[in-house]
Length: 171
Image 1 (cartoon, helix red, strand yellow):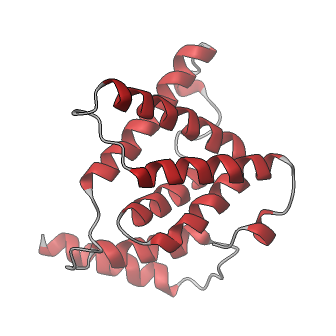
Image 2 (cartoon, rainbow, N blue to C red):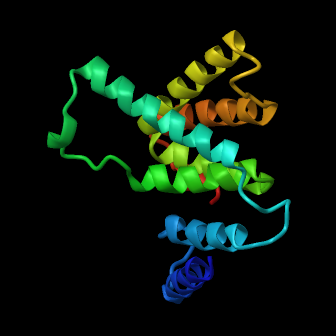
């Protein structure tokens, strides 16, 4: 445990040494904030494992849907399995569901900048909601997830228009 804490502190120090402003490297800034929250002992700021599980299941649903509906490219695909938008949006989502309400803007900005990836996540979230409707006692779905779904839909639609996302949504 101590070794992992030292590794996290070292990683945070390395990331903090990188001089990046908010618009050019949001993933680095979110990673620093994510590490700061994860290493906190406060119950309010600790990450919820249920939210992490939901995020991983959504990503698996997206990958599975892409594999079976398109015919599957498998390992021969040119694009990476996890993009920068995945990482930035995922960290913002985890911080939002852990109590940082201001991270909803970060989720919106990520959805606006990569609207087709956001549409994939929205499709997976709708599938999760439908599973919740069928098996309420097994599959959790809180109202904050519905709030995120509506925000992602709105910002992805805005992003598909080709407008400037930085003017509408701050990091």
